[in-house]
Image (cartoon, rainbow, N blue to C red; front, side, top):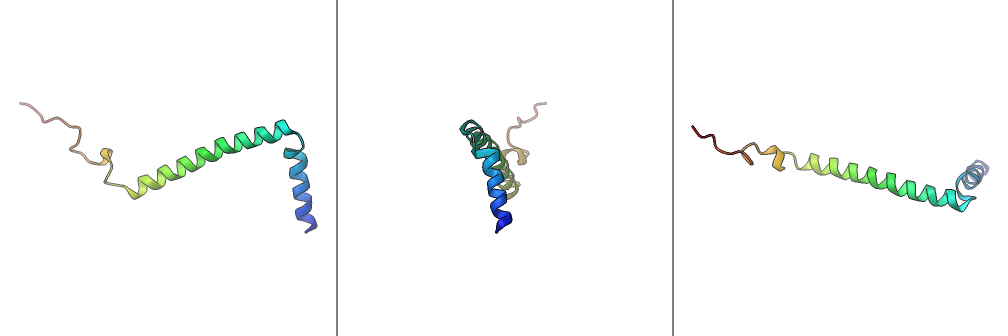
Length: 67
């Protein structure tokens, strides 16, 4: 328990002591967290919809060849 208390005190000293650093940490965390979730959901959606996407269907978007 003493080790955990030391880690929390270190976190407090590093991040939460000054309001400007704390707010910057929250904003940066929200930005990078949103990017990580967006990337993960996008990759999951693509893996579950292989063959069903517009890019995967070869005849869509092509014009017939005129001779």
